[in-house]
Length: 104
Image (cartoon, rainbow, N blue to C red):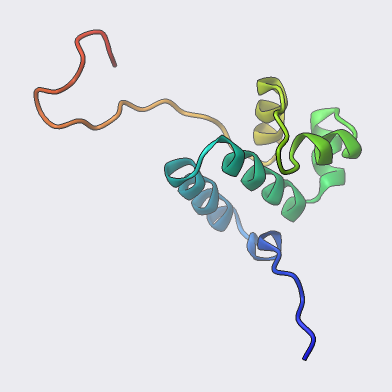
């Protein structure tokens, strides 16, 4: 029996699925996981389209979003914008009375 490699990008077929996937990785993953997830999302949408919208080459995108890559923050922001996402800051929920004085 022949098996094929699992590609998460094949299942990111709606905005809702992409948002859920990226938010889950943000909540549970680390920086490398998030970079990989953004790469999976870019592949699902189409690297050519993302390259056109970001002004980056496809080669640069593949390199920046590959395993072990450490892309510049500006690259991540461009790709997030191209895939229709954004970063939003929210206060961290803490038990009552435990919030630091100088925080959000």
